[in-house]
Image 1 (cartoon, rainbow, N blue to C red):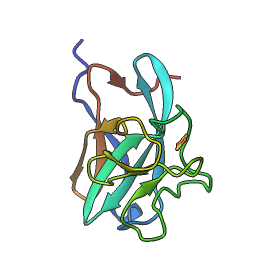
Image 2 (tube, rainbow, N blue to C red):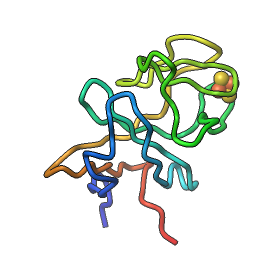
Image 3 (tube, rainbow, N blue to C red):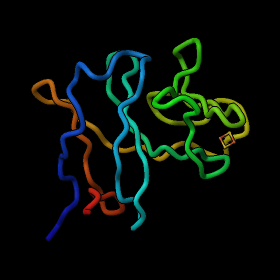
Length: 124
Ligand code: FES
């Protein structure tokens, strides 16, 4: 069965506040269970793997807090890599490339993430 591009409900739209706390979720990425997170920036929802491009580790020191003080960038708490919230591209610090972006959509006040060939829902 083709499991590409299935929408999977992630959270309510109201759970994501502009430059606020993230909503965590799990995905299977390239066959491995990984943490992921969704945020809202300038009105739009975005999601990424919770994996810094500097060292493959989680980025939030305080749970679900990814935005820096300005609310303009996502920041890795470990060594301060900075990412652009709407693209995941590196904009400063020791990152090596960008974050892995997960497609999301918003329909009827629900945020969904979308599977892809290397991105699947986690089966327990
Ligand atoms: S692990 Fe994220 S900046 Fe080093």
